[in-house]
Structure formats: structure tokens, C-alpha cells
Image 1 (tube, helix red, strand yellow):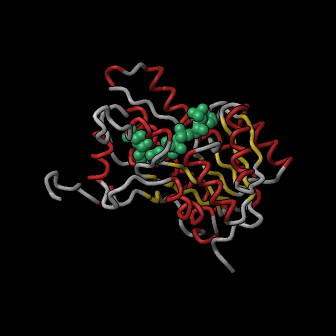
Image 2 (cartoon, rainbow, N blue to C red):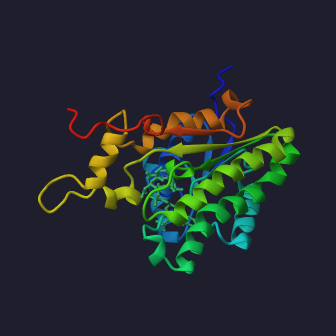
Length: 266
Ligand code: NAP
Ligand code: GCO
């Protein structure tokens, strides 16, 4: 029996029209899962469905704001009626606001916390009852380097992702007896639209200072690609991880292990 086989499983990936969510969903489909996903508006959902179809994946897409409990409950009920019980939830939807904390408004802080922390709570809460009945389920929360580290301008995001790490451990603790495993996936710095501003080529043609910084901080000496997350996501979604619970698997090229390259060392 192949422990990584997802045939017969239904996986919900939030915010998965593109970016990391899309790559993870495509990978889970490649391992045999049926993909359902949501995004914030119909235009994104339609684009996502078309992109999955181009990959030969018949994904079902739903318009749903993960911060809206009524929308989430309706989406989960519709999926359970139209497709079946959700076996795997990947809480991927998220935003970041890069603003110095003393300039950030409370409303901006709350918006990041709402999407990046309250959203995963709301969606996990909606899928857990059916997983409890089935006595089986996988919940994967997309954490971050900022679940462990801080940096300038990302106070709200770090607070949310730090909280998401602890929400992951608490879901693991509270629902492990129902054979539900909840783990985090902690991407390092990944080349997606969300990090595009950090990789922009400068007017003089040089690399963005932050781009150079990340290369020096990463033993792999490169930014990650969304595809680097697929294998770890399949692992955490499959029987291969049935005794892995409450863990955050960092997929960061080694950033968290490394003090960083000495500036003048070639
Ligand atoms: P992305 O390119 O910005 O994609 C995020 C997706 O989530 C977008 O489709 C976005 O829709 C959607 N979304 C935003 N708010 C939503 C809401 N309220 N309800 C439903 N969907 C919503 O981001 P990404 O780089 O793929 O990141 C995906 C996840 O990985 C995020 O949780 C992020 O924090 C995390 N992460 C990213 C990196 C990285 O380096 N890229 C590293 C570590 C962790 P819109 O297009 O409308 O915004
Ligand atoms: C930033 C980046 C990071 C990445 C990711 C790192 O501004 O520092 O956006 O936060 O998105 O979360 O793991």
C-alpha cells in the first residue's frame, strides 16, 4: 500500500486560485485527491477552475471569504452535499501588510489577524464535526517563517502566523483522539505574487536588497518555488503522517538553521 496515495480523498484548499494554494492543490490532485477550493471572488474562482482544467484537474471552486462564518458554513455544507465529506483541509488563504507598526492602524492589524488567523479557525471549525464522525481527517495550516521570527513591518502577519502555529498545536491536542491530525506547513521565502515586491529588480538593474538578503540567509541560496511545498503537503495530507500531529514542518531551504552568510564571504 502506498502511504502517500490520496485516491478517494477530498481536499479543500482555501485561497487556491493561484500561488502556493494552487501548487499544493495541483500536487494533491497528482496524488489522487479530488480538489475543491475557494477564493474571494468569482473572477478568481473562474481563473482557478480554468488553470486546474488546463492541468487536467476537474476542480470545483466556490466563492467564499474565509473570515465570513456564514459563507464558510454554507460552502462546507454545499461541498459535503455535492462532492462528499472533506478529508483534507489546507488553510492557505492569507494576506500580508508590510507597514511599520507605529504607522499601522488598528483596522489594518485586525484585517490581517482576521484573514490569517480567524479564517483558519472558522474553516477548521466547519470541517471538524464531519471529520469527528468519520474518525479521520487532516488539517494543514500554512504557517510561515514569521511563526518563529519577527522582522520590521510585519507585526500583524507575525502575530497571526505565530497564533496559527499555536492554533495548530491546540487542534492537534483537542482532536487527536478522533484520528484527526493537524500540522503546520511553514514555507520559507517563496516566489509568489505575495512576495513579488521583495524581489523587484531595482532601477539600476540590481537585485532588490531584500532579495539579496534572503539569498544570503538561505543555505540553499535561492528563493523557494511553490512546487517545493508539494511533497511536504502530500506527506501531511496522507496516511504517511498518521502519527505526526501538532508539528510545523518548515520548508525553508534551511533559513531557520542558518545564521546567514558572512557579507564579504564569496
Ligand atoms: P497569494 O499569492 O497572495 O495568494 C493568497 C490567496 O488567498 C489569494 O488567492 C487571495 O485572494 C486569497 N485570499 C486572500 N484573502 C482571502 C479571504 N478572506 N478569503 C479567501 N481567500 C482569500 O499568497 P501566497 O504567497 O500564495 O501565500 C499563500 C499562503 O502561504 C498565505 O497564507 C501566506 O501567508 C503563506 N506564506 C507565503 C509565503 C511566501 O513566501 N509567498 C511564505 C510563507 C507563508 P486575493 O488575490 O483576492 O488576495
Ligand atoms: C515578508 C514575507 C514573508 C513571507 C513568508 C516567510 O514580508 O517577510 O512576505 O512574510 O511571506 O511568510 O515565511
